[in-house]
Image 1 (cartoon, rainbow, N blue to C red):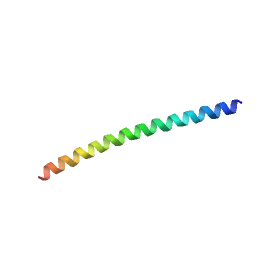
Image 2 (cartoon, rainbow, N blue to C red):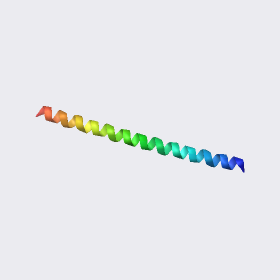
Image 3 (cartoon, one colour):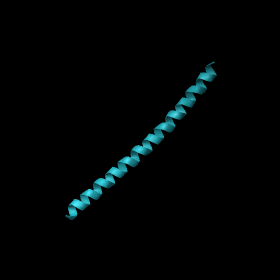
Length: 48
């Protein structure tokens, strides 16, 4: 009984960690893409 409860808690914890990591990576990727876009626009402006 207790081992199944522990397993359930572990699975929930792992799932929560995975979701938090995915959210963090997604936000960081969006920021990096924004910076890349800005740099590309500045480079294009300077090349004109």
